[in-house]
Image 1: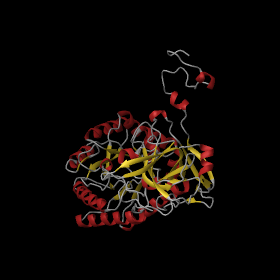
Image 2: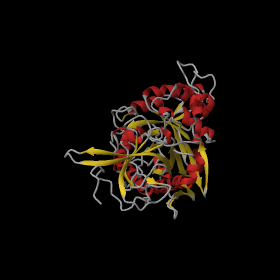
Image 3: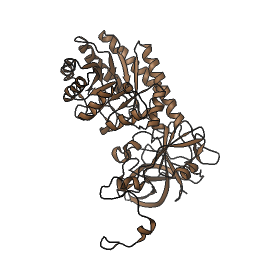
Image 4: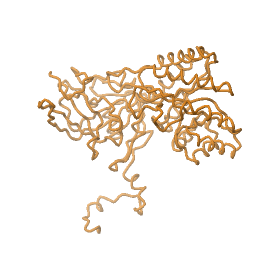
Length: 484
């Protein structure tokens, strides 16, 4: 079988496009004997029939297991060097009340970065003291609410926030624990928009400015300085960037110890996952061991005590747990002329979702995988591009993968590793309702976030006297000059 020249160089042409790469899919997702993709004993067809498509399908046991593993592994490795740990689930990856309960039951705290995320965590029954509050532009109202509720720690992101948090804490008669976010200058090997420790970006302050900022924090009796916070990026493979960041952070940490206590150091998160079968992310065990070694080495070199360590995994816990289920609508072959004048065919497979439920491909040119979910096929694999139904040329879900050549309208497609930054970035573009999220466990499925309806969308339109939809009879009436 000749290789399609439109395929990216990294994409391996398979003999069969039925296999599920284990590192890309959740632990309980399998290709059953019937040919269907099943998760925790529930078939894709059954899920589509009961809940509709597009649909986020989350393997509950997978999330819980990864959360438990994160707590156990990081606790063990840092205990080895004499350090306590505080592990936060990064709620921005995906947050619902059910997921908040799962991760806190596993022993995680939760990191939130808006009033809305705070509200979800509180609605789930998460104690305020188990929450960390991030954000580069927290409103006065968000700060006041977080302080009044007793949020465990607020991450100060700018000099302006020092005064705002201090005033709120004094007003409520509290001593608010805070961390200071700093930019280490370490450039993670990731997409430009995902690198968050560079000096020329909106988060945090420079290492050079940090001592004066910490002095400002310490000048307020209503604030308690816990330590520095760093986040070098997202979707990071490898640990070398963390090693350099730890070295720079602990040098500053040691400097700050000369003028007061610094009990903690927050190293952030950003641990990558596999989106395709060629991705080779670093697992929790390797990450934890490496980070602990980096911290111990730097502390020993500087002659300081190892501080407590905080971490914030999000994508690595929820990302691999989920696939998005779509129905194929149309298929179109397009001839593409290359630089040498040769023509090749790109097969466009259109599904009933798109950039409104997964904008990462458009934002970052992120790569994803895809498989037919309702059946297996022995037909030779062909290169496809899976696209959505939105009025945008960039509405691409999967830039390039192989599907059996007999993929047809009505087939179900599953796109794995969509648990992080897909539903949470979802929109109502073109007035599509956001999909439901269904949790599957032990052969049963239940909705944990319901699908948005047209009535939901219309309910926010102030120009409509009633959010109810027109009846079919009313909708069928002709309209002339705006008068039915």
